[in-house]
Length: 187
Image (tube, rainbow, N blue to C red; front, side):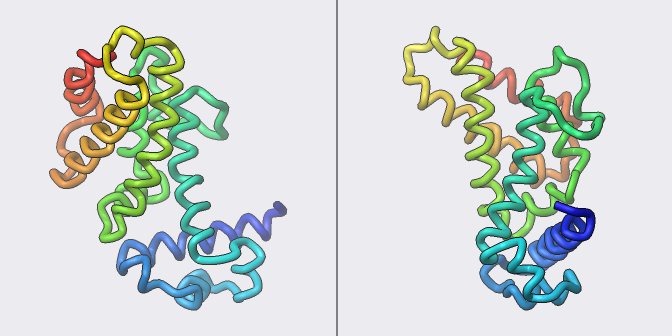
């Protein structure tokens, strides 16, 4: 993608994010998005087939980035969230969320939060699987591995939802400690 295409794509993402903070996803039209982004209809469709594809790409970019960095995959820039290599993956994720890159906290606490929480859960399952199941940390349990991966992922998403509902008063370090105490018997 050349610079002009990247700028158009970014403008569409930004416009879509702003609209999602104000109104329900199903109420937003492609026309609303192109008006907010100040791009033409052809430009929108050059990047995204539908509004649903835009949502999917936005979520993949938001959650893919934080999951990739939590897994230690290469990324373009340093964040405070990168922290120490000894930090837990959950602490890393919470720090990334606290940085609020791309206004992710607003999206997770918006009226559209179910959509974003579902994408977060799906991406988180991959991370939990690689960090715990694939490394053998769940082998000691008498419970099925896929059940544990799902339970840990859903519990973490609910922990983040609780954190948001309570105004993110706890530090990422405090919340990670709470969560890790809860899942300690499982891993």
